[in-house]
Structures are given as structure tokens and as C-alpha cells.
Amino acid sequence: MKTVTLIGKPGCHLCDVARDVVVRVCEEVGATWEEKDINQDQELYRLYWEQIPVVLVDGRQHDFWRVDPQRLRSALTS
Image 1: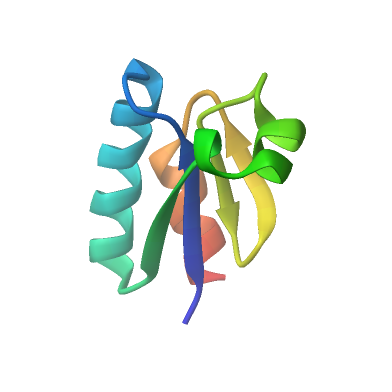
Image 2: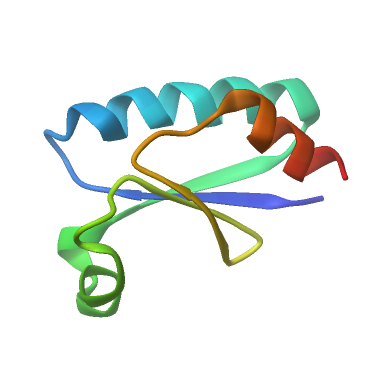
């Protein structure tokens, strides 16, 4: 089973949109997901502050800014 990690921050409109896509696709394919707040982790902030929201699949960067549902679905079912 693959795990999706959404890295974002509160008050971020793009993060809200990305969360909706992640939740929907993960429910469809049976993947698990988690969310991390970039403001709570200095290393995540250093790595991704210009790119949020960032989506990782099994710890590897998959997308940033906008999440394409079909692309995410393909990554989770391959």
C-alpha cells in the first residue's frame, strides 16, 4: 500500500485544493495519506517553502503547486 504525504500550511488555498484531490484519489484507490504542516518542521520548510503544496508518494516528491488527479491515481496504482 502506498502512502501520500501532503505538505502545506494553514490558510493556503492551493493546499486546500490539493487536500481535496489527495483525499478523493486515496479513497478511490485505497491508499493512505497524511498531512504535514511546513511551519512545524524546519527541514520541510527549508526544502519546500517555495513549492507548497507538495505531494510525496512513499517519501518521493510527486507534485507541487497543483495536483493532477489522474497523475496521482496512476502513481498510486502502478
